[in-house]
Length: 213
Image 1 (spheres, rainbow, N blue to C red):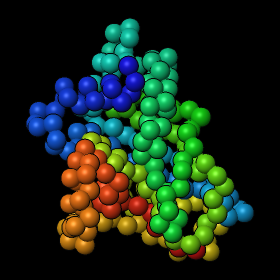
Image 2 (tube, rainbow, N blue to C red; image 1 turned 90 degrees about the vertical axis):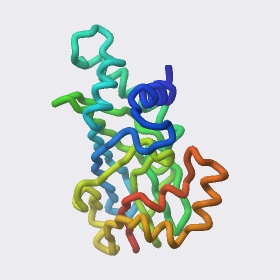
Image 3 (cartoon, rainbow, N blue to C red; image 1 turned 30 degrees about the vertical axis):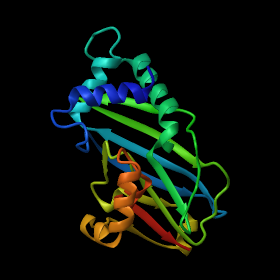
Image 4 (tube, one colour; image 1 turned 90 degrees about the horizontal axis):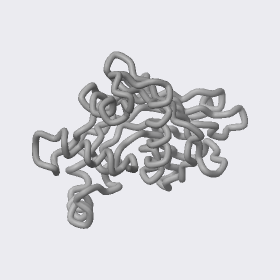
């Protein structure tokens, strides 16, 4: 079973409310954007901590030897399933430059731990092609389907790192949902009727790091 199919089945079993309600999964995230000295983006490091309810479902599905814990091999299996299947969702990682979405290369590995009844995921991604810090750029994590609510607890969880950022201005943007809806009412309505299960317009609501160089 692919991660997407497993995820859909898990969500259906867990949801105590109508299927269209969102979100079902809650994640606390940290994103570190690293720039090399030559001004190119070297990688984006992700840390995700999943909520306890969803983590318990992961334990049930991946604890193959039923010892109520996830051993090294089971964690590796989970990480590989995520690495393979989340490719279709760009690993929930988004980069834009002057409004253009930048393609993401798959990570070599996704590391997973299970501690204090919570799944934690660690991985790094890179732009598919060399990307320089130039113009207006955004970096963020969001799920277009809205099944997963990804939250950065503090602005300090969106971190630009590297000397090249010294030549740029940067800030964390936390959009106000009411303002987003008011400013994009027509386009959001059209997007919903065209694809009610998920649309790229959801990125308007996502917390992000904005950089201007």
